[in-house]
Structures are given as C-alpha cells and as structure tokens.
Length: 358
Ligand code: ATP
Image 1: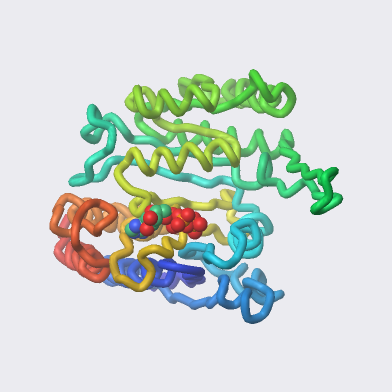
Image 2 (image 1 turned 60 degrees about the vertical axis):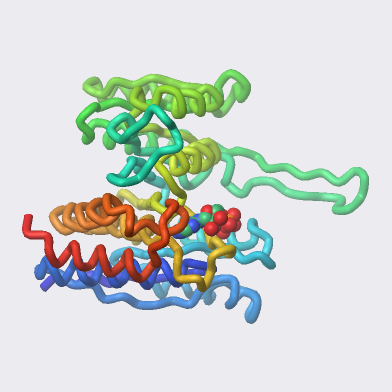
C-alpha cells in the first residue's frame, strides 16, 4: 500500500484545532479508499516555541521535513508577537527555501453557503487565484535606518525577475487551460508601477503565445476589485503578484461566504521540495479553545493535497463529503451563522466519506 508521510505543523491559535480535524478527515478518506495511507509526523513549531527559545523552528527544521511528501500547516500568528516576525519566522521560512512559488487559491460558493453578493447564488463564482509566492513585494529586500530619529527611513523594494514572472505565468496559463473555460485574467498595476509591472505584462503576452487556446485579458488591480464584486461570472483563473493576490484572495474568500472555508496550496511544481497545504485563515484568537473553528478550509486544503499527491479519486470523494456537509445548514459553524462545533462538522465529513458509494 502507498504510504504518504505528511509533516503536520498546526502552528498557532486555532491551527491545532483545525489540523486535528484535518488529520481525522484525511485518515478517514485514506481508510475509505483503501489504496493508500497517511503517516503524520507532528511538529510543535510556532509562537509558543519562539517565546521560549527565540526560534519558531529548530535550526535543522527544514531538513527534518524536506523528505516528507507534503506539509499540512495550520496558521501562524500570536497577539503578543509582531505579525512580520511570525510570517518570516515560520510560514515564509518554509515557503521560500522550498521554492513554493505557486500559491493556488480556489474560490467557489459551496452548497448551502450564502454569498454576501445578493445576485450570486453559486455557479457565477468559480475562480482559482494564482499568487506569485516567491518574490515581488514580499521579496524581503529593503531596510531601515536611523531608527526613532526624525530622519528615519525605511524601504521595501519589490523585486521581480524574468525567471520568477515567466514561471508563474506559465503555471497560471497551464492551470487555466486545464479548466473548462480556458480563461485567464492577468492582474497588474502597470499604469502606476512603470518598471516591474510593465515587465510583468510583457512576459504575460510572451507566455500567452505558448497557449493559443487560452483566452486571456489584463486588469488593473483596483479595477479588479470591482469586477470581482460586480461581474464575478466573467472571471475564471486569475494570476497576480504576491501582494495583489494576497489582498484579492481575502476578498474572494469573503465573497464565497467565509474565511473559514477557503483553502490554499503552496506548490513547488517541480516537486524538488514538499508542497504545503493550509487554510487561508489566520490564528483567530477570538475563538481559540471554544471548539467552533470552521475546519472546512483545512479539509478543502486536504483535497488539494490529495490532488497533488496523485490521488484524484480520493480528492473528489473528500470534496463530495465537504459539499454534503455544507449543504446541511444545521452543520454550519458560527462564522457561517450556524451553531455547529468543529467536532460535529468533522464527524459529519467522516460519516459522509463512509457513506459515499460513488
Ligand atoms: P492572523 O493575524 O493570524 O491572520 P486575524 O485574527 O487577523 O489573525 P483571522 O485569524 O484570519 O485573522 O480571523 C479573522 C476573523 O475571521 C476572526 O474573527 C476569526 O474568528 C474569523 N475566522 C477565521 N478563521 C476562522 C475559522 N476557521 N472558523 C471560524 N472563524 C474564523
């Protein structure tokens, strides 16, 4: 039997609650399939460790997980640790060295979920956002001098390389081609940012020539927020820079009903390193320990992990189980306006998996 070794990193806040739920559902899914199994190794990396030792993960942390088939990540963030320290100390400390340059974020309105857009009932909103995940505005280039003095100065320099832009464009065009509508929107800001964003547009046009069957268009990021809310059905696959896609995907998650549902995959498409799967929400400190965290974003991230591992039938089965559960409003957690608990939703997904005979 094929055995997949998964590094489970719950991180902070509700991370441990949703990852425990995710492990339960993925184990049930593998058991139902019978052809493969998961072995989870648990890593206690996160803000608690940082506060005790000064480091989010051990020095050889990446070596400990680089041989795993995939990483299942919860969330990073603590109220008493500055966000930029957490982000660079844990999430980016894994994404960047493992060259997980393609961040893929599907958005759909699942059955039973109500979008805040009053004219949208479901099929009008079915997107995948591809976020450049290795450079751009989050390249980490910059500095700060003369701290605290009136002449203090700080810079964050966006860095775009031809290699980095070309590979994310090629990935996005290929993904668009694999979807029924074969439609890609390239998000840009090449009116105001006249160097890197103009190069971004030029490279998009070059790569487009390799994909003559994909229809594509360009949108400025500001206008894109309007198109997402007013004309969602005109979009399918979307590619944007690290910063732009970060913002647009939070908007997308909200339009699809809740941050608690949205999944993401940080892919190293060449598979030289493990890819990382995580719900897009954060640590949600306001609900920690209450047992009401919505685990659907983690389950859907599990679906993406199964697809990446080459288990498409199991991925479809887990997605069917998720949709059966969201369709039942008595199984909605409070973020969706319901009263269900994490444990009830998890059990319902496991039961749906057991009862799926398709
Ligand atoms: P961070 O700084 O870690 O990103 P945050 O609190 O700024 O944390 P989120 O953790 O994403 O951002 O939470 C934003 C809001 O959405 C919070 O009110 C939180 O309770 C809610 N939320 C996020 N994820 C979930 C979830 N899985 N289930 C229920 N509510 C959630």
